[in-house]
Length: 180
Image 1 (tube, rainbow, N blue to C red):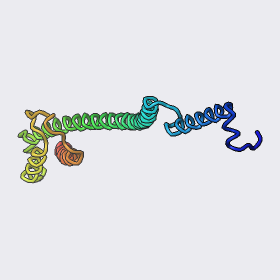
Image 2: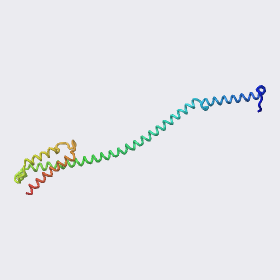
Image 3: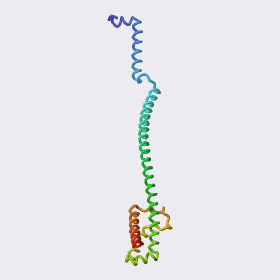
Image 4: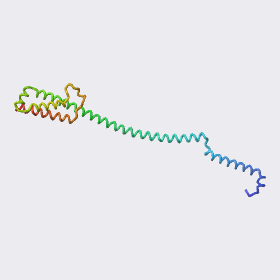
């Protein structure tokens, strides 16, 4: 299109028609841009909510993965706890059986020491009965009474060792007296 003066262009109706279409397109383009790409308000709200849901889903996924790790750790700790409980239960059973054996031996040795024949042998062999009876009373004070429920208290390992040492000494004395 050659350069024409404005009055000449105004005479040309086709040109006005073209200009109005161009202006209309430009106006529509600006309106399209200002409105945000042509999306309606509902579409923009949906898009924003979808982004929020995606963020929430990612957070939930991360929390789920973290929970799985914690559950695995808890399962491992539970297994270790069960193993420790089994060991403790076995040790308690061992201590109970040792306690019963030692208590039985203590009562038998005590009965033997109280027998008149053994008392006479102790006097003849010159062993101090008072010192022996004090040790026996000490040992009997530590041990359980036969009437007491053994589940009431589990003796410690040191207590069992001490009682066994005293009992062994008593048995040695009895053996010396019997073989003398």
